[in-house]
Length: 297
Image 1 (cartoon, helix red, strand yellow):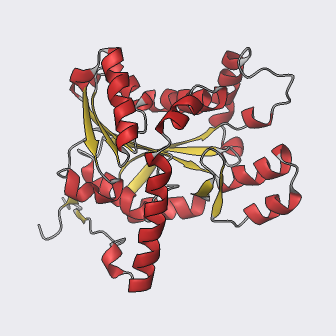
Image 2 (spheres, rainbow, N blue to C red):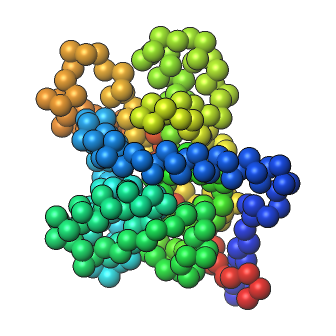
């Protein structure tokens, strides 16, 4: 019997960039870091809105389909955890969750939320950069890793995926990834803003505008994201659309009063391939596609 062993090396190592490229990457990282350092309260308020709740609720419902039943023994990592909303949901299911974020104000919000929920024994807070996963955690540390709306803001999304794949405990462990969809930005510009020029631009745009903080945000097309997953030795086990039609409903449809009905419709649409491709966000549930060993082993 032939045993396939996959040696995982980091093809996204920043050390390979030119001095100019490295300086640009560092400047971008600094801008993104500052964006979140002072915006924890603003982000927490946003999470109370119907559109943010819908994004969280849909992602969590998708994730629950693939969680093992024996959650008490599972260890999870929430990359770019923000105020800890998703991490606390996992902790309530019995998972032990490590929350990683580069923003101390965000971690302070998460700490308060964990204390108020009585979940401090299930939570570990860690200040750090998701791009440095290989230096922060041993290989094979986690059964579940969340990477939700983080890749849009990092310099090297492929490097984060590589680090996350390395940190998965085994071939049955789950890496949950959610990214902003390029196609979703096309429809947003055309339908929501009525801006046909912006819609045409977004067909090939790699960056969009992030309204909450007013900065730039990376957009993902399916082919580019799948290519990154392949390089990181990750295989997609499910692909879901998140917020397919909810952003474009007319004003007479109350997002609050009709929330449950909108949620159920979104769940149905998000499972169908023809709607996944045009959703505002794409949710990928992935597993490692091979047995990973350390460099030089």
